Length: 384
Image 1 (cartoon, rainbow, N blue to C red):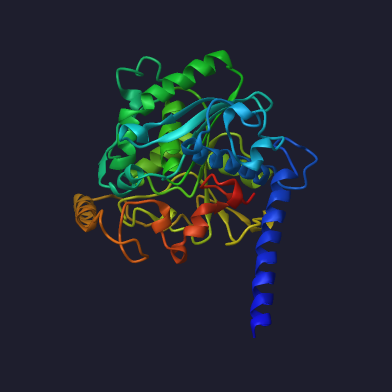
Image 2 (image 1 turned 30 degrees about the horizontal axis):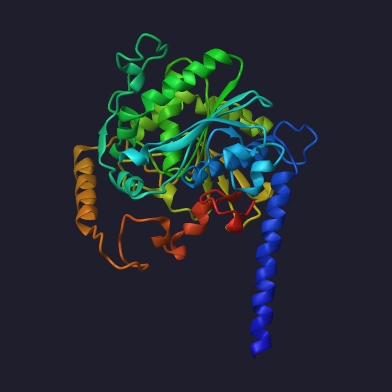
């Protein structure tokens, strides 16, 4: 009996390790732009950008400026030394959580691929969790329409009837202006470089809002989000799709399995976060890729190009009524009332704390793994 259990544990471990090794081989086997690669171009790019998203979780572990593969950047992960990442130079990290705000990530330059890269980290603090739960819809006004940026805005910023998630919008109003100005200064230095904005989880929502701002300013960014929650109402989603030309981008993806601009949204099988907030007042935008397999490795055959169809919990409602908004406000009030900072840590208690309080059976694995393990920065637990 004991021997049988030992065999089960042994082969279970081998299965997990072999999956991680195969996932690493997939990750290492190509660099973006390798025309001799055996995988579709869009698949290779998504795996590459998932790696970029994962580095944002290393900020709270000491990641700083410098090339990812160099010691001075203090990047602890093995994949920091992969050939497609090691020469990417971190120019700045930001962490507004230290100021009691939301939003953290980094800005980098990849001279090999001629990319300016902006990455937003997902939820990793109590402040982030509180912001996630503050999903009362508020009137949306792009930062580009304000006096600060109006003189250089080239597109129509009118978004009539648009509402967005209040917690995410607060970041846009309070902190994104400074970041946008910093990126604009780099765009002037490298005008022929592509702007790529990447985010996971809450960071995916912030990348969407920030990407819209750059688009309104006349740039043509590529925004890639992993496990993104819904950001705004149906009118906002339509505005976003128009800004990013999602329909036009879809044609290129279906015909050539490639993309170089627009809003790309990746969803993993059974990830619960893309269904949030759980209300009809919010909708998704962008071209959707769907990973139709739980465990890694996520090979190309498991990547489904869904596009504009089958959006998560898409509704047929043509408007978002005041009644719906009132219902959302009541839901948020109920959540806030349930918050108990002294509650014991267990799977059924509700707290705003770290993701360790997120039970595994409720889609935690699915939200954590997108081709690789995106969240966390522990080299001992790194899967590739």
